[in-house]
Amino acid sequence: MFRKLFKTRYAPDYTLLAVIVFLLLIGAVMVYSSSYVWADYKYADQFFYLKRQLLFCGIGIVGMLFFMAIPYSTWKQYSKVILLVCFLLLLAVLIPGVGMVRGGAQSWIGVGAFSVQPSEFMKLGLIIFLAGYLSVQQKNITSFKKGFFPSLVLVFTAFGLIMLQPDLGTGIVLVGTCMVMVYTAGARLLHFFGLAGAGIVALLLLILSAPYRISRITAFINPWEDPLGDGFQIIQSLYAIGPGGLMGLGLGESIQKYFYLPEPQNDFIFAIIGEELGFLGGTFVMGLFALLFWRGMKTALEAPDAYGRFLALGIVSMLTIQVMINISVVIGLIPVTGITLPFLSYGGSSLTLTLCSAGILLNISRYSKI
Image (cartoon, rainbow, N blue to C red):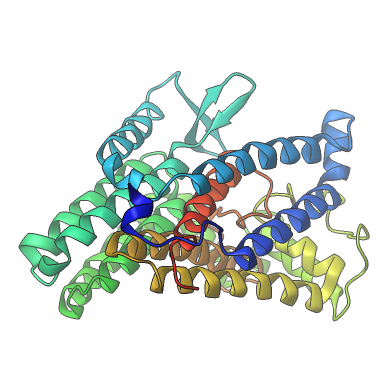
């Protein structure tokens, strides 16, 4: 039915697909290079993190191929159910005994030997629902009451549940992505100015309500004030990037991964890339993300309907915002937020959901004139 409605190339954007595969390969190599010291120390198996990363990659690739094969219009039909499930998962993770606490945040639900992070599901679920909402209500989006406010209620309800964990980094990515979608739909700037004012006040209250957030701000302003405490991570990250120079110390030759930079295979993997592969290696990785952004935006612009355009835009915005935040943290431009680097950082839920999102984007590219 869908193929009769829209002309399809029956093949995805191979450039976009190649970029994703290339990033996954770089990620696997760098996860091993950055983690084998920690893995050998903690688990007596230097391949521990690599094996799990390859497992997550395999699951994610299967998910990507699955989503790439299903017409993206399908998700619009089930968007309400998907969003409801995501909200139920966010509520479930807050229940004592169900949600698992890591690093001070109750953000995971245990599933056997693994765990899932409901906030990652919410990012994709909300994009799917909001794309459908905006494609229908775009004519009303300039009205605060009819279009703008209902979308705000939805987005900030999800944000509020995520903050109860708490997980400010994921919440910022979610809100930022949704606001890009709403703005592109034609929302009035006046409404955004009002929202920005309220957002600044709310952000200040969130920071002041949690001592660890205040510590992160002060550590960002002057990490050397507490070099063995709150400033430790960012200092060690800069110590990794600095010696990397133009060409890097060489693959596998990082010094900071020897128990200086905590768990370097996660949020700070870009620091190890900078140390081992240098400025050129880091620039190459950022170039791949720029290419991903370009092909993703072309897919969005050339999608055959409004739903496809908003859906592709949401996925590309989510990935781009996450990349910008992660790299900005690693090089010391913004405070530490705990955001992974898409396709590269070690992870389960994050990597799997990122690849599933990429699968939807690749499916939209099958119907785009690119």
